[in-house]
Amino acid sequence: MSRLVVVSNRVAPIQEGEATAGGLAAGVLDALRQKGGIWFGWSGTVNEAGGPVTDHPVEREVGPISLFTVDLTRRDYDAFYRGFANGTLWPVLHYQIGLGRFEWPEFAGYRRVNALFAHGLAALVQPDDLIWAHDYHLLCLADALRAEGMRNRIGLFLHTPFPAPGVFMTIPAHAELIRAMCAFDLLGFQTELDRTAFVDYLLRHAGGTALANGVVSVFDRLVHTGVYPIGVHVDDVRAQAEAPANRRYATRLRAHLMERLILSVDRLDYSKGLRQRFAAFERFLADYPAHHGVTTFMQIAPPSRGDIETYQVIRRELEGEAGRINGRFAEVDWVPLRYLNKSFPRNVLMPLYAEAQACLVTPLRDGMNLVAKEYVSAQDPEEPGVLVLSEFAGAARELDAALLVNPYDEAGMARALDQALCMSVEERRERHTAMLAVMRKNSLERWRDRFEADLRAVPGDPA
Ligand code: GDG
Image (cartoon, rainbow, N blue to C red; front, side):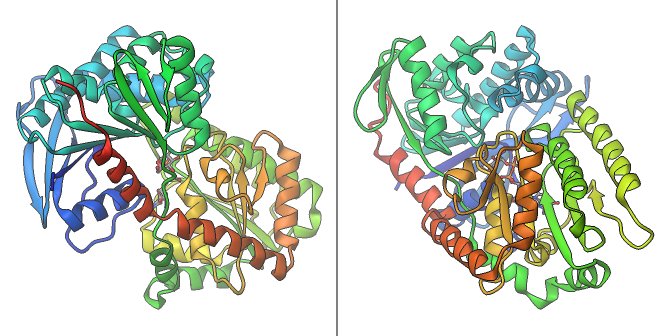
């Protein structure tokens, strides 16, 4: 059978026998571990001007997986990673048009890095290999691979949302991007809303014609589209949450906290709605004083993309807000908000989920949101906590038994928190059982297997 070649911006730093963080890495690793294959991407190293630049990918073997990585020059990193990928695409894909910027030279840098990846891959890939690219960094990869003469089956899974065409079209290079995306054979999305938005663009603005089963005829080729909601390993999360060796931290925490814990865990990113969430927590403290002295809100927010200005701004804002809210409400024996701007090992995080009576997951937009799914997985089914979830997270399409909130509605979020903390055990169990059933069905294995099978089944690029 043909090999699987996975391409993502970063190759996870994997060691044999060690668990890795995040859904992408876990799902991809499972697939590669079972059948072997190649994982290709950026090494994470930026070569400063004049520094050494290798023109061929560096190989490392980990079990049956061959990892190939390339370095980026400072110029490419600035234009591709800080520039077009995270300065333009990320905000627009998350409907944050006002935070986006656009520079044609950065778009050229984005294309250049996609071409660099394609060139490196061309030397490794055999004609019948399946190529599975991941995420918004690589929208132009298939186009670049075709330019290298490759006719392989090539798929893309977009981990972020895909916005309504009118939003996407605020990117001045939208037409070039869409044309390049259509060089993929299969485009996978987290939700039907994202898939429909993409197909809508093709039909209304690119002259496409819809055929059966999510196939669109456009630019003289057939583009397949599908919905593949990413999942988590439900039982692994629960096992990590319960393992006595992992629970030291959680047990100590329990001794220090008052009665109730509300937990949030997010990369420090403006799309996650942290500022609005802090405001909602402040409203909760103001409107529901019965929770004073007994409830703590803990926000874990590991720094992310710290060399991009919009991220520095949100970091400063949150630090200020956390101090102000605590200054307003704290008592000598109670601090309502704990803001931790650092990351924790996964085996510390999972028991913390299990400790929390409520988890507040309120992104302004999110492709899926795995924290929501991990929280539900980590709960004790007899005494489960309550998930308060933004209706604009992809996960809300599946986890509709959560308390769904609008992340722009401070009073609504405050009310939902009160409801979560006062909910009867019967209702908590009922909601938890419903969510667990959906997550077992849409597991991480299913995400991976369905995408791979669908990619295998596409007819391939005509010569
Ligand atoms: C993108 C899309 C989509 C968080 N803090 C720590 C830590 N984490 C882990 C969580 C979770 C992962 O990182 C975050 O995943 P999310 O899905 O919540 O968000 P993004 O990072 O934005 O991921 C998203 C996802 O891709 C998959 O398709 O769902 O919509 O934006 O697994 O547990 N892990 C560790 N320490 C931390 O402090 N070890």
